[in-house]
Image 1 (cartoon, rainbow, N blue to C red):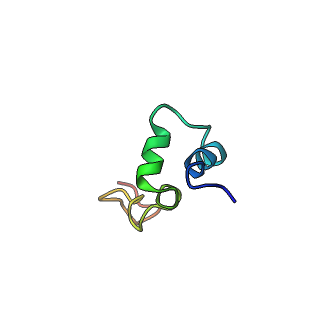
Image 2 (image 1 turned 45 degrees about the vertical axis):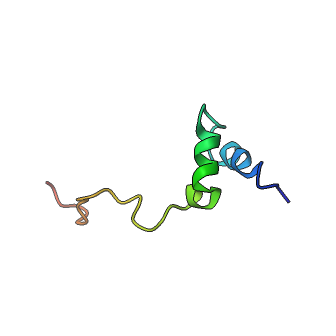
Length: 56
């Protein structure tokens, strides 16, 4: 089992290219679970066109 102190470092090592300056503090503050899977809609750009194939 990985300690809570090491979880952000482990996640950044496994899911990113390792931690950059400030990444460990940011992931620790927001929580590893939220960093991995942000709340629904957070990845959705505002005003996205949901009509695939439609030329704008």
